[in-house]
Length: 166
Image (cartoon, rainbow, N blue to C red; front, side, top):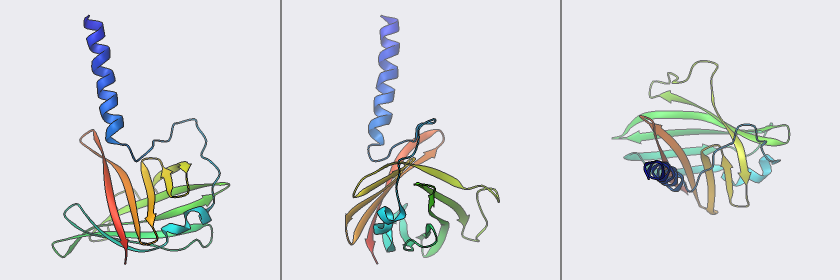
């Protein structure tokens, strides 16, 4: 009976964590990213505004050019920049990779000089692009959602960013 209770507790913990992240997928080590082109992600291009973390978020995406789409992000709270992100989606061989770096409001990097946060492509659909723990969702021509798994003190939480075209 004790063994059954332990197994049940583990399965319950896994189920809770899986259901908490229903819009993002994790890249499984050893698997291969699907074939994709930047043209399939081109609907992300544009200037977007939303709200998150108690402030205003702004995200600007360039159209595909030179095997990449570049973006900038900033979070503004109490009329002050909290942090920035710079990065993009790159065409690498026959697939895509999403990469970014964080910067404080003074533009000092959070990651080491030669480090980036890299998210491999997991799956691509007509209105959704799944990178490792990041999902881009097209609602319509003027609205997108971005889902991001954020870890804090060992606890993972899926955050939804709702954007409207600026």
